Length: 281
Image 1 (cartoon, helix red, strand yellow):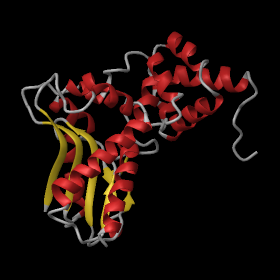
Image 2 (tube, one colour):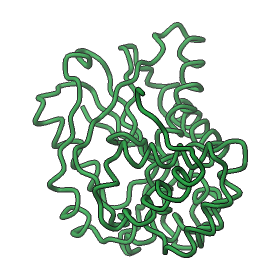
Image 3 (cartoon, rainbow, N blue to C red):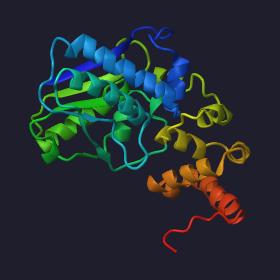
Image 4 (cartoon, rainbow, N blue to C red):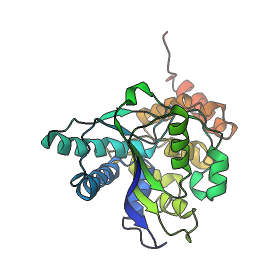
């Protein structure tokens, strides 16, 4: 049995039911907003579904697929789990478990500006992988931040079919585009509602509640070189190392569009300042 549940329904291109500036900061790593969104999602799911339809089996919560660097949804998932576990424990149910959907392909395209066909063409050759044995006889909660065309959901369900999963499955979203007359690029509108340039990232990164994700890494590495250089020199050593190691972990050093900015970090910020990271020597 598969159930889709969304906290917010986007029917109007100018009113979303949530603050688009908050959403924009969330997409670029503001963990304070992730906490708010994850808690709201859990509270909504509990009050609107679980209170009347409790899940008595072991629940496994699964964030949106990623390779090495988590997506923004991962941060929201952490707070969703924290709030849900309190309710489960209070009512005598098993607290949640977690697992990961592995993906094999990374791309530089900005998914949010694409229409439904372009999205499926982009991710259609990707493959998702999960630990089938771990999931046996458990209820699965797949979390994502927003459902626009349903292409990611179709990829998840393709994986479910390929693995022969017979679990009860919930697809949970913070928001869902329900008015199909609104173009899918509304996603980019809310993604960048507050982040208009690389310099708008500074307050998020230095807020004290920053959580790195794929979007901010790709955005920084793909930014024009001159602005990138100004921006990166204003960042701390800790952030620069975090950014660089995350990029390597996702294989971004093999993507031509990212190599100039990555090489600048390596050649000008690590070597020249004698901060080259040594691995095992």
